[in-house]
Amino acid sequence: MHALIVVSHPDPASLSHRIAAHIGEGVSLSGLDHSFEIADLAAEAFDPRYMAADRAAYLRKAPPPADVLAEQARIDRADDLVLVYPVYWWSMPAALKGWIDRVFSQDWAYDDRPGAEAPKKLGRLRVHLIALGAADQPTYERHGYLAAMRTQIEHGIFDYCGARVVTSNLMLEADPRFPASHVERAREIGRALFETSRQLAAAAL
Image 1 (cartoon, rainbow, N blue to C red):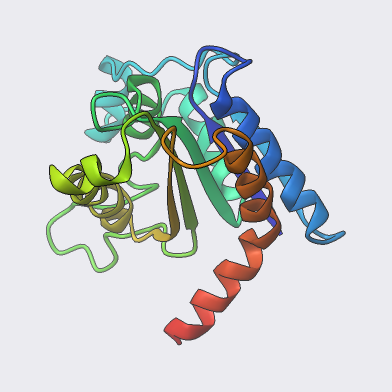
Image 2: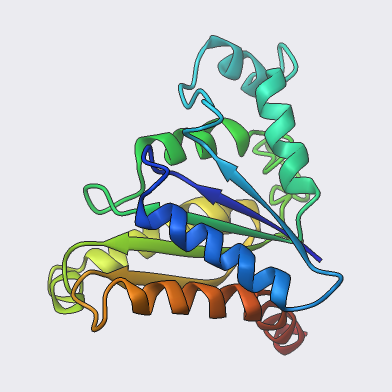
């Protein structure tokens, strides 16, 4: 099985990159037939701007841009998609949101034509969210931010496309033994990635 780990942070020495790397390490340790690829949006200079070419593709007046097709092919090769990102203004960074805006395009991720029988096209894809935040858990809960993020990201993006969010982890600076505890947890998330997906898929049958 194969995982695509997408990390969105401009600093390669950031905790986000360390978390992504240790998730990959855990995947490697989980089985000989398991593999992963890390997509570093900053290092690869993916353009997150939704431009005229993306609009033309949405209107079915032109094929999707080449960089979008390349990212879609990456996802098509993966069984599980893992997003690793810092929480910016109670959401994901603009670079990651723009990646989703452009890559999760019509006719590949969904079909919004009237009467379409299968508007959700990513039912096979399993998603794992790893968000890193600075506030503590009571703050997120007290202000309803955790629920808002889940509504926006889990429901608003992935459920619309049929992709299932299998796990959602919020790693906070206020947690004990930060950041060592998060690095250890990331490795365990990677190790259990496909097993968790299989268990939840079986439970849904």
